[in-house]
Image (cartoon, rainbow, N blue to C red):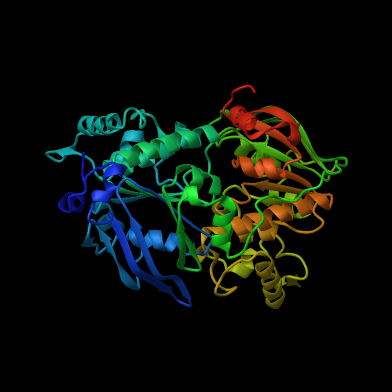
Length: 528
């Protein structure tokens, strides 16, 4: 197994959390780190310590500087000023290769795996064993197997499985093994539970505790405050590029952490009076949808979404929600069955007809593929679905001032943080990109809103705002189909809840009859 050279030089070894106090220094020291971008100070004089055998949760709003700080630690950006020490030695990080050599690895929210390759090929990619210039996969497999056995079976994986065939929880495990195989002693996890069921999240936390107990230092980035209290040893909070506080799970609450992040006391519950549902706006009957490889993703499901109600669609990733939403929005062909929107057959309608002409707002699960154009400006992205209509066009020409005025209103209403409305959307943080997509798709007077993971990667303050907006849409008589992997989101917003499991719809019932435990069991395919 390939180890990290610098990690060996500075003598980093797995140590238990109980021995941490005997260490003369933290494994990672960030001192006075500041990072300037044109017109923006992303990080300002940040100090941070991380000890062996510790899980440190790093919290902050979108744009608070978390991603920039982690990118600096991982060698993706040089700091403008300040220093980083690993094992007491200054780290001169010119690229991610230097960070990996120092024992630092990051598991990104969007996995960095080659889907057509096997688990083993992904783990050893770029670090393969060779003999006389010839690849030696048998030695690599023994090394991976030895690494997994060291953790008592918690890292069990099939090295010959193809990534594309694995559920998201197993892909996350592959990413972690890949990092450990390269000698990582400092592991940074960015929103690792975003697509996991509660049971899968519990298994992940068990794994992280096992890694911690063997001395791995872990930075855990999440917006889910409940998880922080469950798994973290210590908590650091960033706001507007600065560290504004430290705390521990036993000394804080979700509300206190949220207040520290936002600078005010946000509401963690959504005020919602009972709805008054009207006639069905969306009617789905015996719908079947296939994946690109011909397998069945949606298997003969039927349901309705009524005016003035939110139907919550829960389920783990790869159970058919993505393909269902694609079929309902004209992005994927329907194999059989019918879809009716406001009484009109839209089974085989185009995305333009369903969205622009039919009046369906669509917050897509993958904003990069279906929700934005990274090279377009903030202002341009806010009118992607309206730019061919007045007041944004006249005589076939764009009216730039009308577009800018619209963008100013939306940016202010949804707290989209950009240095300029002409700034390319791809240069904004992930959370600000998501807020822009939500702002564009939430329009007054639409009969139907389809929201797929609407708060994915969004901070607690923005979650509060978006949730209130969804409820307001419902209160105004709009039908809302909410697909989310976040159980708290489903339970907080939905009037009725259904679960998708292996392409079928199960457990459709009023939200008042569903609790978190039952919902988690249904998501795992266990009758409750």
